[in-house]
Length: 574
Image (cartoon, rainbow, N blue to C red):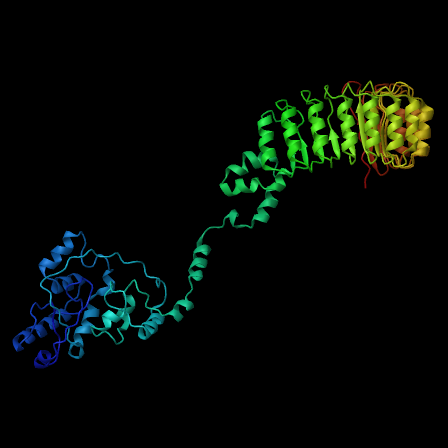
């Protein structure tokens, strides 16, 4: 099937070159008129010219399709479920294109096709043009340099140039969408794909995941372990991975979580070897096995806290001592099963321990305490509470072997003045807790205050032997003292008056449950003290009345009531 457009029909007969072409339908050419004969005489040429004039007068794409194709050819397309123009937008191949070509049909070369019928083929779906949104003016210049194929299926422009489309196609050529890019390599460099990507990213709404991971990790650092594991990690997989970052598993605070079992501790230990601090206080579902697994996988562990874990024994603490040589802090208060064996292991294998707490571990004796004191010369803090088997020998051992001690507490232990007097060797001592020491005399306290010049906090509560003379000496000699606790001591108003008169550093005084304290002492200390910021008068019920307390420039009126009164707080204006 083919047709010819020429100025001279005789000339057409002489030029009978065979041109093999593949065009849009692999049948009739879209730029040709349909003629089923292989040659034309003068009458046939006149009829072809009339057909060209009729085609130039068409205005719609449907009319063009019906004019160009026979009913048989149109039926083939309809059987395939598509029309000729279903794959190409209507505006792209309208009559103006063919009008432009048909008006210049005299200058076009001859195209012969020998086809008995239309070869059926499946129409190809045209891709979206990469040039959408680009102004037409720029495209016209590019198309002028790189001719655009009219047929949309050919793979190169060479096939269409053989038909004779070698000139400028005008504005209509810029509307054709073809799989082959009309731009050259230099033009593709001028329109990089990154620009389209940037435009697409700019159109996306802002997302927190677009922030760098380092910033998100800092945000996650402000969340608690519960918030990270039970809330943030459930948002998305990216957040879950952030929550598993090693820096969040260096310090594990699992206190009070009954869901924590040995299996959980083992899984944590298998995935993390960077733990430096772990707190399993009040975790009743763990045992020595779980703690030992953490210890075996955490050689850099520095702080171990396990208050009120009565089910734990020496096994867990010995495992920590054996696998964690850099241990610095051990707080295992209220563990009934601990014995001297675990303390001896700590003293032998953990020489860097700085802080220990074995309060209410009732099986610990002087033997374990002395071994710990000898093996940990850098110890700075020690606290014992209600350890009845700990006596003056332990106090003496710590005073001799641990000269860097800053905090010492032996509340309720079997300690006397003979052991406390050894604390005068500690030149770095800043806080001393001697609550409920039954055999503690005033002379020992005065000697400790005189020798320990850096002492800033002294707790003498529940010692009935402490009297006004001792408090007066403390007020005079305690030049660095800021906190003095005298709850339930045998003192009177004279002690408060002496503090207000002689001390220039004491800021906190608590004389609760001292039955001899009256309005006179409270009034005098509030008027004379220049440093007092807090005065505790809990259950000082003698002679309840309304009194006026004045501290420096601030006056506060407080009504004392025998049953409802708890504390009186005095705030000094800065």
